[in-house]
Image (cartoon, rainbow, N blue to C red; front, top):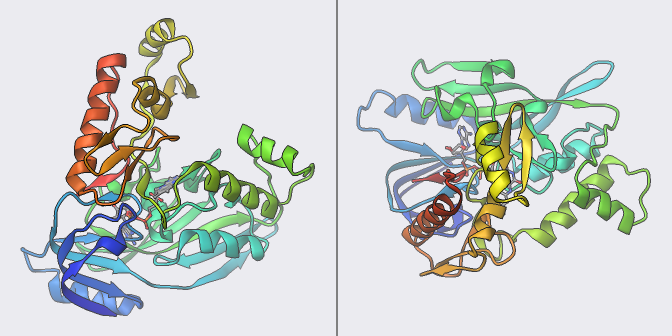
Length: 338
Ligand SMILES: Cc1cc2nc3c(=O)[nH]c(=O)nc-3n(C[C@H](O)[C@H](O)[C@H](O)COP(=O)(O)OP(=O)(O)OC[C@H]3O[C@@H](n4cnc5c(N)ncnc54)[C@H](O)[C@@H]3O)c2cc1C
């Protein structure tokens, strides 16, 4: 356990923004969290934020309150039946280590979500997704501390109200729930998902005709390493904006005007590729003070070395304005701005 005052958060956010908090509380046992919350729960002035790996956060100022940082570790198989293995990981586990561990334990499904930065706790908050998979396809149950009642509660997959990078923990339970662990329902037999062209190309290039889940994991890691900035080298929060979803009428108007527009269907609606929209505004590599649009991936805003949170925020406003002017489409941040 760690309890510090006036604490620097630069190492705790992947943007590498130099922000501080009044109090920093890190715990590696849930009991430490329960004691800490019991002490502060009824204090009306108690302001807190739960910070996992800080890989989807932009600090624009110091945080005048307490940062609660789960560092609880542990992963285990809780139950098996004919087809499935139920595995539980504690909130502070590193997501990618958990994916690696599940494959090693012949529990399959998470391969396409390999190499996403962050923690297991946040995987349920964010409903993380990549390469044709989303966490919600595999989450069985979420265990959390309900701050209003002080009770430990369990939430089923259905009750989590998962959506595109959304869950109940970002809405109804925002600021009211600290996730303690997540149970994932994985498969005993591989169910290879190679729908993405990049994955297929990797397999062809490496002469892999019958890939195992470990091959898919290797493919995803190689692709991501090539395409995305490494968090250890370049500060970013991954995709800064969500892909905007528009209805059929708006989509048809845009498609007539911009025949090459990149999109995916989303039920009756259309999800536009935000990176394409930004790129079409000529913004790849565009720099604003210490912040820039990544030169290869327009959806990623980066810290070029000494950016402040406001540099990134202002850059994001410039990007939003340009996209809105050109396409009449509003971009909304995926990153959480504090
Ligand atoms: C280079 C890069 C690539 C990325 N690629 C992807 C990608 O492909 N797909 C994708 O979905 N995301 C991606 N992301 C975003 C990020 O990795 C995910 O959003 C991740 O889930 C964030 O995890 P974290 O632990 O860092 O959470 P944080 O950023 O610390 O927090 C995210 C949110 O979760 C809440 N939270 C965290 N832990 C808990 C807890 N225990 N209980 C309650 N609330 C909690 C926080 O309060 C906050 O609201 C990428 C980020 C980077 C930097």
